[in-house]
Image 1 (cartoon, rainbow, N blue to C red):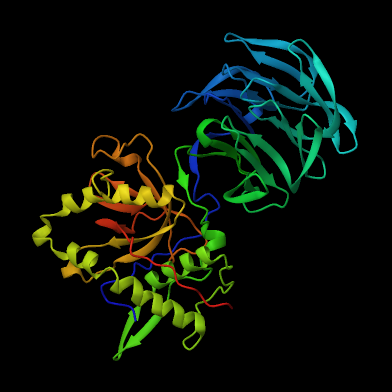
Image 2 (image 1 turned 45 degrees about the vertical axis):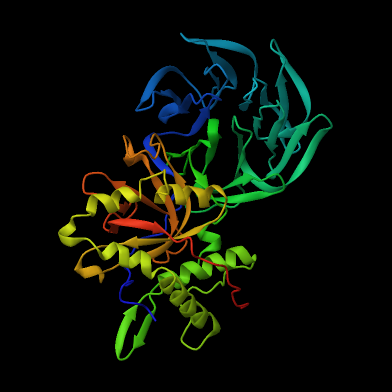
Length: 452
């Protein structure tokens, strides 16, 4: 049964490949990010631009491929294959010819040459004065902090160069980038709506990351930049802390539009049951059911979600009741601050404790008003980003982002943000969905979901 206290906000939205990505100003075709964060882009007409943290500064010269060294200087390959390095005033020519260039956080520089070979073009390593021919062939290259090269060849095969030579890795891709923290990012082989799917190396294989790009460049602290096939520039923030719960693979595929009739009255939604059940599947290691429509009454999954809905409500009646005590809105500021408090048991502190431990956790979203009988909701928190905010109830509260899996938005990651002006929390993707506050449901206990 859906308790009327928890009737959900049935907002609608289109699926976005960039739910976890921030759209940046401008456009581009290739991006290079240095170990300290300096970012350059190849824009329209092969123009070169440098990011100054708010806008793109047009620089002299032209290029088609770009990367950035530890000093923050760009290395550019132009249409003719000529290589240039920015020296702070202008471009200095570097001997040799290339089609791509990759620079590691330790300063090691690799390039893809212009001599055709089976699997792509010849591979080069910079000695400081000239290019050393290396075995193998590839079409895209980057280097890790230790100076080892990561490449993809013309067939999409992925290889790592180390002290014993080239080692082939699983998977196939079209572009590859290594961050200053050693994280490795790959654009997959098969196209999606915005380009090619994004993956991150976990030491054994590739973990999918939401997004679709045509090139990618990783910087410090996990910051990743890329462009899609519309030449838009996107960035994924490095301060983000995420669990391994990805809505597109771990969340239910159907929307939360259940209708439950109780005593002749229709109640809408089983958001808490869907949240609990999805986490159950996650912890059990079982695949989420592939259903794209809600399971009908009488099925094992429908009954399971219904039972977990009751669990989610009964375990947190004290939390919901506490929030109804708000005469004439006198506690609005207090409720709002609870979600921002990162100390002394504040809800932001509770949230970070769960996410930092890798545990997706249910959240209760409280709408307020109407004596507590309103469109409250339950979702799964899967990550957070603080930005400049420190959790002290001081400046930069607007930087806080809480990433959630919401059963009203299948396959998406939604971004819950504080609105400092009106003391609410809203979805960045759907601002009409807003709540007074949230609480962290630490009473969730795992159950064994049905096999389907």
